[in-house]
Amino acid sequence: MKIGILLKEGPYNHQASDTAYKFAEAAIKKGHTIDAVFLYNDGVGNVTKMMDPPQDDRNIAARWDALSKQHGVEILACIAASKRRGINDDVIIEGGTITGLGTLTDIAIRNDRLITFGD
Image 1 (cartoon, helix red, strand yellow):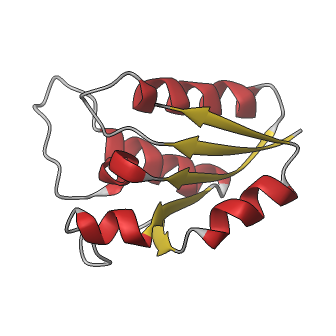
Image 2 (cartoon, rainbow, N blue to C red):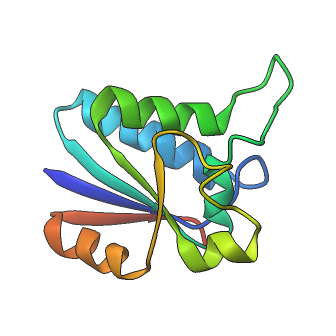
C-alpha cells in the first residue's frame, strides 16, 4: 500500500511527531511504501536543522532526514507555513523540500491512504 502522511504539529510539544515517525517506520517494516510526509502548520518545525536537542533526547529533524535518505521518502514543508515561522531553504534538513500546498493534493491523489497526525 502507498501511504502519504500529513503532520500538523511541531516537534517536542505534541506526540504527533513521534507517532507519525513511528508509524512510518512500522509501515515500511511491514512492506508498505511511505511516499511522502507533508508538514503543515507547526509541523514545518520538524525539519529545521537549527534544533539542537540535549544529548539524551531524540533529534526529530535527524529522524526525518534519515527516513528520507534511507527509504526515499519525500519530506515536504508547506511554503506558507514555513515563511510564517522563518523557515527557509537555508535551515531545512538536507532531505527536505519546501513546496506549495498543491503538493498535498497530489499526495492525496497518488496514494492509497493519507494519514493525518495532529490537530
